[in-house]
Image 1 (cartoon, rainbow, N blue to C red):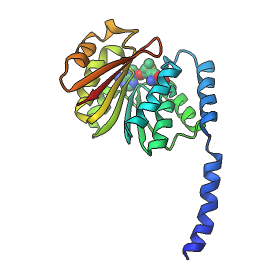
Image 2 (image 1 turned 180 degrees about the vertical axis):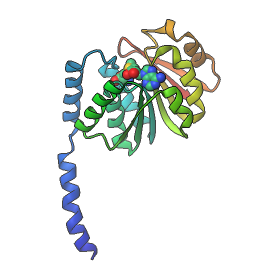
Image 3 (image 1 turned 90 degrees about the horizontal axis):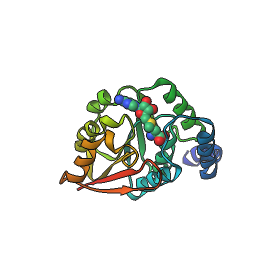
Image 4 (image 1 turned 45 degrees about the vertical axis):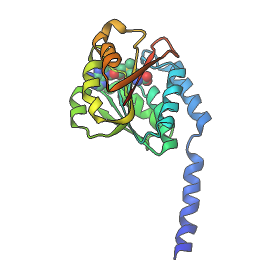
Length: 204
Ligand SMILES: C[S@@+](CC[C@H](N)C(=O)[O-])C[C@H]1O[C@@H](n2cnc3c(N)ncnc32)[C@H](O)[C@@H]1O
């Protein structure tokens, strides 16, 4: 019975693995997104790659992204999560950008790693349960401190709250920057791989 089941299932699994885009195809799709989908406020490619590696370093199983846009950073996060066996929950309030993201998640074959929710992150986050290994904040800059306060209790010890644009928009997030530097629960470093800049705050 087991042999019969395996004989049926193994070719199906092999076929599914063959048709899923590989790393090179995903990287090509990311370049295509950058070239053709303008005004999406995406992280730089080196920042995306860094986030993907961070997911692996943390052995992240649950990641939360606040600000999906067309899914560019989400694809990078999900590439890391594919390797750790984890999942990404990504939130955006804009229907148009979110539908582009859904298309991009499907095209990269990462849609099974990503749950995308349409809505106001400030309303959705209070309904979420932790723990998360990684939170990536990349939405409306003056709200960053609110996101920090909301998500810090949801992040496991040793996990990370990362945020984009800390170099390009410091004046719009002064309260957030002060908090990540002075909160005794956090150890923060700034990573400069693109014009936006990433803050990486480890929860002690
Ligand atoms: C800078 S873009 C995100 C870019 C994306 N992380 C990337 O690198 O590909 C910011 C996104 O945050 C979304 N956003 C802003 N405020 C929001 C809110 N309160 N709830 C959900 N999404 C929000 C915007 O609609 C926009 O698509």
